[in-house]
Image (cartoon, rainbow, N blue to C red; front, top):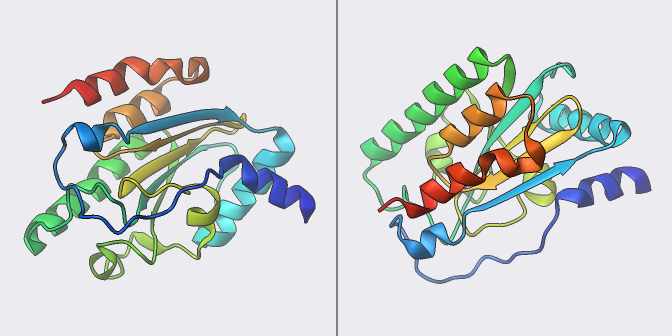
Length: 198
């Protein structure tokens, strides 16, 4: 049990959700919260994490393939927040469509997860591809809540990359198409360009 807890703590960083007004603009305040994290698990830790992903998503995972997790939660910065119902449905459909295409083209398994506190819980619980977080993903992987979208990619060799921010499929595509991540350096230019967009 101690081993499992110590493995899961790899992902944890402390954060608390503030009650301030939600920022819905892709402005400098929003972009300053973009955050990427690269790491590598030992073979034993990888097995523990992949088994936990499988258990808490109720989806059988192939340990020889990459895993992509898209996560929706409440956050101080959220472009979708306050949009019309039809716009929210459109964005969610795009997330499903693009993530399916990118993962299928790169032999990657896909998990679409939403937390109980997500602004879009009522939309997501009606969608067949999405799974409600048991609490595992929020407690152990997506521990920060400054942005309402995030992703996590895990390779069979134990390398992982976690990113907080929306409109991130360019980053996901780069990670899935390249075997050499250069300890996350491969994404630095892409993240800089996203942050510099007007």
